[in-house]
Length: 411
Image 1 (cartoon, rainbow, N blue to C red):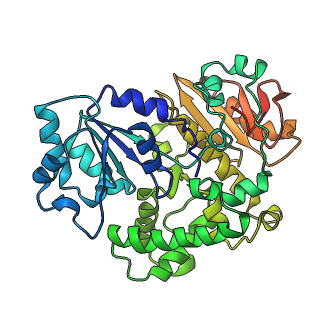
Image 2 (spheres, rainbow, N blue to C red):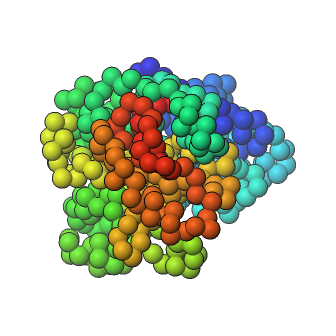
């Protein structure tokens, strides 16, 4: 399979030239191993295993590291957490840049060990599945999101390049963005997603927690996928499949811990109220949503009742992926007023707020700016910048005084 350049490549290399340990985390099959093999060709690599104690890494971590001197790549570090204290000792004794590159696909295991043992020595980077610019090989040092956050007015007046996608929007949503799916014929995409879900449930979830009923957890994943791009009431989420709220919350945390789900908290100028408000939840891959919802083809997706939520999920995940390449990523919020006005996404950076609506419409209109305008009116003391309505269109156009319609497929 042809290697595709990743937006995070330069950032990872710069960090590895400054810090002794780089930890790259992310869901299964997002390309962590492929990326590090490409970037660190001279490093020795050991793929750790959940069953076999490779090289006695768990039994005798110091001997293992003696036999595998740095620079070293340890792939799937969560399978040998005993190595982390031994790595710490070696880094403290001989601190050099780029000594260890670690990868992991379970957020709980990796981040807990790293934060406790390698604080100040390691930089953590999350790798997601492909972004649009990566799929179509238009990676740029300063992508459209960074341009927008740095200077919104300049961004809308001198818009970035539009990507001429070779796939329809419905096909891209249905495929999702996992690297393996990118090159598959359409007839095999569902087979891949089925295998991915089975492996994920059987291998990852059973190691994280005691799931006595995998079939019921599978139904929970189906339920969660149907709730993507919606506010999540964790006390009610399990009722549909007959599990108690505590179990539903634990299972949702497991989805987050294995990078299959992300929350976007509610915005409120009062921090306490912000914390108590309901987050919106998003599955991290639209292809998996379509598979879990038994959507059989891109054509079938075009008339599905979840289409709008799936499009919003795709856009939010795309913006999140781009944000992670930035030295200072923005904070993400959503907003809903008591009267029902809402904005899908509020980005915060440098004391400024950037409202973004997401509309599956080829003709965005002034009525699509209602939520953004209401947000601006509700918080007159905030520094709120030019808003965007992201839609499946070809070019940026002004649709109200403070809001522009903006295409999704651009660099």
